[in-house]
Amino acid sequence: MPKFLIILLGPTGVGKTDLSIELAKYYNTDIISCDSRQIYKEMRIGTAVPEQRILESVPHHFIRSHSIHEYYNASKFEMEVLTRLELLYNKKDIILMTGGSMLYIDALCKGIDDLPEVDAELRTSLMNRLESEGIESLRNELRFYDPDYYNKVDLRNPKRILHALEICLMTGLPYSSFRTNQPKKRPFIIIKLGINLDREVLYNRINQRVDKMFAEGLEQEARNLHPFRHLNSLNTVGFRELFEYFDGTISPEEAKEKIKANSRKYARKQLTWFRRDPEITWFTPDMKEEIIAFTNRQLQGQNPE
RNA sequence: GGUGCCAUAGCUCAGUCGGUAGAGCAACGGACUGAAAAUCCGUGUGUCCCUGGUUCAAUUCCAGGUGGCACCA
Image 1 (cartoon, rainbow, N blue to C red):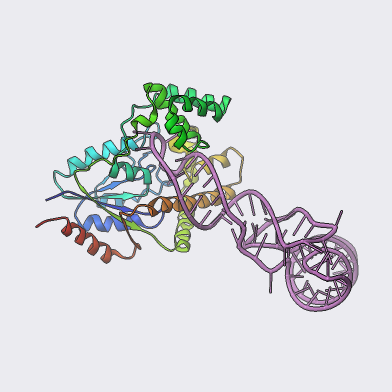
Image 2: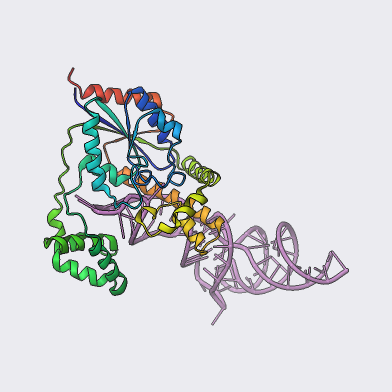
């Protein structure tokens, strides 16, 4: 029997959690979360982690499993999930993954090229240079070390320039020489289920969810994490707006409105990314029967018996 | 009731000394290989309140109306 990974994906707030529980129960399997923020144990309200009783109703992985103080990225996620899957496939043929972190989904499905771990000191020094010398200086250096990538990269995006340069400086090789553009083979079959709603309905859900977060104590959660605001893990919708409020830049009402607006924006960005993936079959969250029927057909079709 | 001010994009507002208009936010689209809930790029969506008048031409000037705000009663 081949191994399967069913991936339930969609924009934030669309209702993936409830559906994932039903699917996991139906297939009697575990859920791997694919969410770059729910993975941090210090956050719960602002990242919309499911309630404890829901988490306990089905085995979950990669929810609140790592610390905000830990350096994390899509590659680490890829490796850790692959290791976990190998273990889980000893007992199960079908595993469910759910979440909306686009890059993390792709890293797991297609892999991400092997690169050396970026040295923290180098990153800091390059960020300081970006600050003091401006992006032009880093651009020129990248053109020297990796003209190919220089011609391809978005020259106005500091993060792209910075990272490429990091790799060039660390390895003495052009960053583009690490980019294989070859999807990695996976020892399991992937079924991608997309969940979406009418835009207006989705936005209402997102707005209401933010109100609910505030009612549950988001402000206090953010206040507790305020000292760590410089961490990348806290550069997160729902927290950075409240940090602005704590710093006195904006009013509490503005912070709340900004959280709603930025959540909507994030949902749109997710949809832009998902739209170009032809492997996704789309449903609405209420189509449980259709989703199961479709998934069963896929499972059957891939299985010669 | 009187006087004054205002009425322009979904919202807050700018502007046109008369030639049918533009910012911020929102909205919409796109990029994306170790920071990805990150980062970056693009798009103006409009009975310029209504009705007349002046004019070759009115969102702009004039009159009246309607609505809002302020002050005086």
